[in-house]
Image 1 (tube, rainbow, N blue to C red):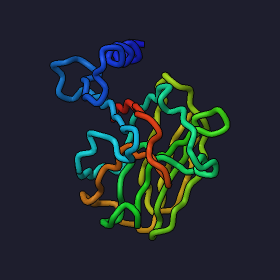
Image 2: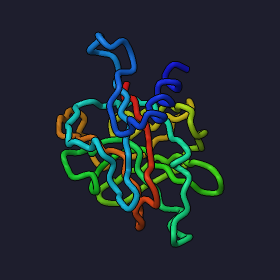
Image 3: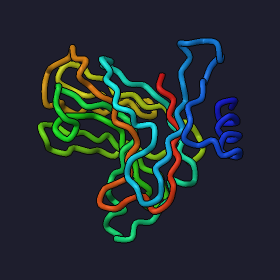
Image 4: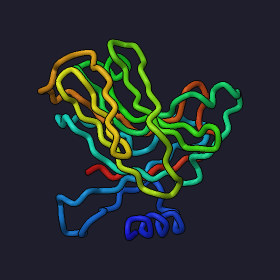
Length: 194
């Protein structure tokens, strides 16, 4: 509840696109919430600084507000999957090998997907829906030759394109709108990596 109130206050005073400690301010290990903004007419979120991670598990929570409701100009593009958060893999570019969660607004619901590139081939699977303005937990783990996506307590397994486990060459993949069309209006997503 405290988390939701903090984000509501930030939204009211216009502090979108910022980083806010989620725990005690003097605790350097406390998770940090980053409020990402994808500007109208753009694809990339702010705060998308290039950063490597050696983690084999990425756990986070995310909150979408009403800005996640949109209508594409071309109706079939409503099925395009926007990107939420994840990482590249196998010491290659993310459009060759990566794992992340995706999302779109379709049929009056915010739908969540497992979204991967495996040897350059796009693989996705719908995982469920989330409510606006409520936090949901997400986790991607590398387990041998698979990605294990955990959403709403259910695990979904998608094969990787390699078996490399120890690597510091994974880089984070941040919120991105598209598909074929840019964001029709500003979109705000709050993510707290755990």
